[in-house]
Amino acid sequence: MNPATTEFLRQRFTEYYRKAVLLTPSSLVQREWGFVLFNPGGSEMRMRRHIGFSGREELGDYIRNLIPQHAYYSTAYYEKPDAGTMADKGWCGADLIFDLDADHIVRGPYDQMLARVKVETGKLLTMLTDEFGMDPKTIELVFSGGRGYHVHVKDIAFRGWGSAERRELIDYVCGIGIDPGALLSGKITTGPGWPKRYRETLLEYLDWIGEMPHEEAIKYLTSHPGIGDKTAERLLNERGTLSKHLATRPAELVVKGKLRDDALRILVEKDDGEFRKRLLERAALADEPVTTDTKRLIRMPTSLHGGSGMRVQPLELREFHDFDPLTDAVVFGTRDVRVDQKFPLKMPMLGSTYELKKGISTVPEAVAVFLCCRGMAEIT
Image (cartoon, rainbow, N blue to C red; front, side):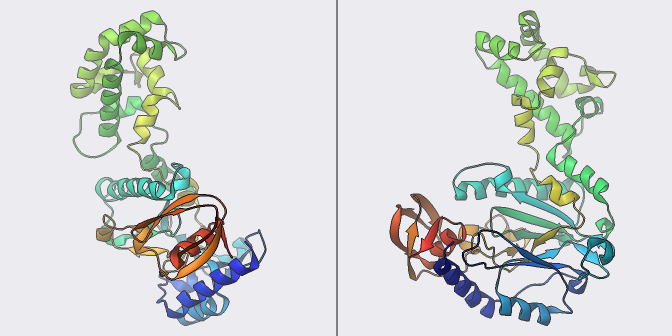
């Protein structure tokens, strides 16, 4: 990022922070804060952290004076949040956090990544409320300003949880460590949960195999080590019976905690196989390290994301369905700005799609901020 681009962004961020009403987290004085400042001509992101504030006014003055490129606060509560080492801070608990980042889920055009991560976030919210019985009033949803969403669970019941307890929860959400024998052994339940998801996925998978031409199905099955021609033929012949048991008496498919059918067990246990892919589509693909980290820094809602120029936007759960980050989290306007685009790009924003060519072009200010923050263009 050249100095002219850095100055342009800093001016735009200054304009925003002078007018914005900044939301602060609960127990602000117990939070550690961290900031990344604009670094003209620099390529490294250097964070100032181990900072504490006595109240909202002091925090607001700090942000308006320094104009950070990124602003973070700790999910943890501390006795001394400004202590220079983690050991000296005095950990008092932490909010339960889920981070869903499209970059960890799918690659592609920015708007498509945002659409996909919104689906994953919806699945997570449903799990938390319908399967874990969490009170929606304790859940705070935030668009990260970049490629995803943060889900903050403020229920004090989770505050004292360590990494191990949080790991169990995120493993459930992400479908990690699933035991087929355990999921199929119990009685059939109609309520939400992994037993139902697993049965439905396995039925769908067996139907998918059955719809293949016979030779193609044999070729697919025998591509798995441990499944020969005879075993593949047997599995195809017994597919209907297996599906019937899954739908009515799944426990009959299990013996001593394992799937009775060796071929079926090989198919479902393949980490990168078709069945596993279909099963993960029913999980909520949150970022596991964020949830297990009890001392994490997370973006401040209503701050600006330095990698996009969009607002870190807090949302009511009822607003989530209709929320469009490329409109609702954009804070800059449509005045013309000339940029030097580094490569051709199709960019949707503010209800329009801009087809940009490499080289000099004039774009709305909001698009210019986004491109410059992402390193895709420079101010001419």
